[in-house]
Length: 315
Length: 220
Image (cartoon, rainbow over the protein chains, first blue to last red):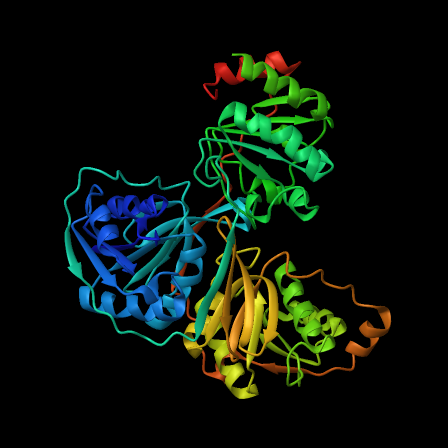
């Protein structure tokens, strides 16, 4: 058994969120190699070499891989997997992993196992289906296992304590029929939604973007929390697309998920029901969110949330 | 119909109606792979504007894995000389999110996943994609694969006259065997369980009650 953890980088910096792939490889046992590619990759490779548990870093220095475009990144991985003979290829179920790994699986004629939350043994994996309403255990008969992991189930491996060797990977320089044009990422000084320890989330009950910002953002700041939203709030323009929590948005599992004005549709619950503590404020006492909330408060969020923010700030 | 598939049909029809593709859209084919009852989905797709359908019928209860779906689509894309595949970003039962990327990989085509905007221009097809933390725009050329995300468009309702018209449109039936694609599964489902239920239902009287309860639970 030998695993290849495909790590993500941005502008010459290792994405520590992608180190969950190393944690999954540790659970499998066997040797662990990590893969990084991009322009000026040396700094990223050196950073990755310090991660606990990795034996070897395969690094490919070529700016053509900076944006993680699957059209050339998948053939790149194929060549390096052939050379290294890895049995398990692991990446995060992130935008990068979701667009890349199925293409890699197609090239290797493997049926990928998506978004796993647990590893039973080297060929048996656990993954949620039906928006988390059922949990399937599946056994793979492919020689190579291609896996994406759910970030909330595999915390990042320790960034210190390792001393992996660094080796140049092979570079097939495959043609890329897609080019990267631009990106527009929401800028925020608050914690990242996917990995934050606390999340405050607002729904349709906030009524407008102005009210969403006026009511929810000070609460987020009082708690040092990331901001999330329900699909209804995002569709109504109260919050940015990237903040959507749910089956088709982000899946989060913070220590505290505090929501206001969210009724708790099943698709929303799929994105947050593994949170350690769920607190909800809603004026409808029968809202389904109260069935999963550890701490429920029935009341008008326009009164209760500012009061909560004020009292938290005083402490 | 899976909501992402509705978005895919809608986008295809809009590309034609708004004449966004310079050469015009010759034909829109709806494809479904599933048990006998899934033929209804194709009727809906044709009522929304698809010209004809291909139905790959499988036995009731037979689950087709994304890799096999991708291989079936490859065969049909080659047979029908398709140059744009539009499909949903994920199913809403298995939630794998693989098919579009597999098709692109098998065909060697470009892929733009989780599209929220599709624009045809001189330099090719520009697609705005939903990524972690925002959006990203990529440019590719036909032939290519686009997978759809929620904010791409708002699917229309099929009107009664269009539902009637769709009844006359053609549905070709074919089996995976006839296409030479094996449906043998690579993943064996050992068990499916319900997730452990969450014990919710705790209520507090006021904001002070909420703060002290959150403290008690170690959440703040």
